[in-house]
Image 1 (cartoon, rainbow, N blue to C red):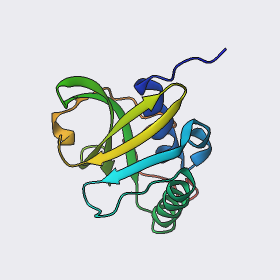
Image 2 (cartoon, rainbow, N blue to C red):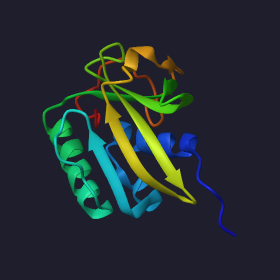
Image 3 (cartoon, one colour):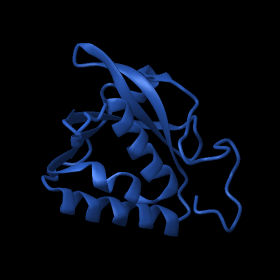
Length: 145
């Protein structure tokens, strides 16, 4: 029996992937014709395989350069409705950078939009960082982030 994926579940999977640098949390939920757009990048990614290649590379680069990224569950008013989101911060949880929004169909994520608008400052933040034990403390030398 197929159950529909919610945007909350999509947000959780994305936050886990970002916070743990492990795309296995997200990969099985992505539609084959998945799309990803960022308001900072001109060209959209239009396949699951291309997005996973992009995301793995980005996570690996952040890990190599010890760039700390925080993905927090939240809710934001966007496109005429309040919806689940992931608030992305870099450096510390207070240094907000972006809002991730999700489109789902059936049991798959069909699209992720990484946005400056709506701004992450406008989100209702939960304080929940899936996969991170204590986001307020800097990593030890052997931490992933």
